[in-house]
Every structure is written in structure tokens, then in C-alpha cells.
Length: 171
Image (tube, rainbow, N blue to C red; front, side, top):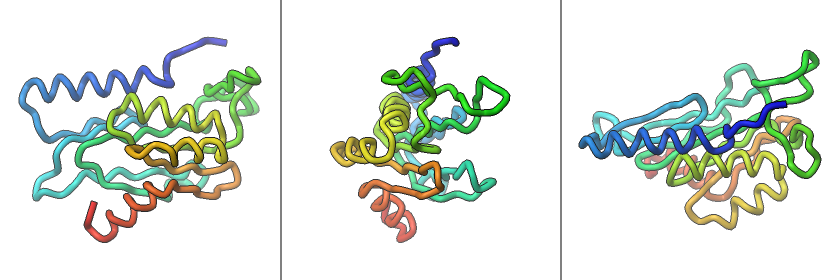
């Protein structure tokens, strides 16, 4: 087994990239680092950046999409990197058991920074849908979408607000 900093390192790197762009006067950008997305400003025409969240079990269907102007979205899931041929053991380990966390299928989190979104997505994934949602609901500047193992989509109240406002053009 190897230990990596994937739970937070990529988010921190994305934030540092955003800092470099901002220091050089770039005010509108979207950074996509394969599951960790950070946005600033807006696209041409003053439209926000749209970030889709893929349901890993549906072959490309997007169960959620939110609009970003300034903020980040990160997704953690146990559906891409496996360490065995049966695809039972993935890269997100529950420290309480020492085994792959297998209660959720994927977790996407919106937060002010990529580091926060990345760390929270992994944390909520390990906590599972019930405890993870309780945590998300306590954070006023974050939102999340949990897709359970059986495909049920569980959005936090703030995620539903972000998604609804996107559809209505408010976000």
C-alpha cells in the first residue's frame, strides 16, 4: 500500500495556480485539474462557468451542475483507481477500518477554495452519506452532492439552492 496526499494536495496546487494567475492580473479563469475545479470571474458575456458533476454509474449522465463565479468544486470517489483485479479496493481509505471507504459512490463539494473543496469531498466520502451530510449542513460557505452506492443523489440544502438558482439564472 502507498500513502499519498491526494485528499488535499491537488486542491492546494489548484489554489496556488489560481494565486499565480491572479498575481499576474488574470481576473477570469477556470482551472480544471481532473476533479478539482477552481473559477474566478466569469466567461465572455458575463456568464458564469458551469461545472457538471458526473454520476459514475450512469455512463456520463450529469446528476448535478452548478455555476461558479468565484469558488471551487472537487469530487472524490472510489470508482476510478483500484488496487485489485476484482475492483473492490480503491484509493480512499477509512482510517477507522484501514479499508476502502465504501458507503458513498461519489461526493462533490463546492467551497471557496480548491483545498477546502478537495479536503471536504474526501472527508465526506469517508464519513458516509449520513454523517457527511450532517457536516456539510453545518458549513455555511460550502455545499455538497453525495451519490450513494445505490445511485441515490443526496444534495445538501445549499447545493439544491445553487442548482435551482443556476436553472433560474440567479447564481
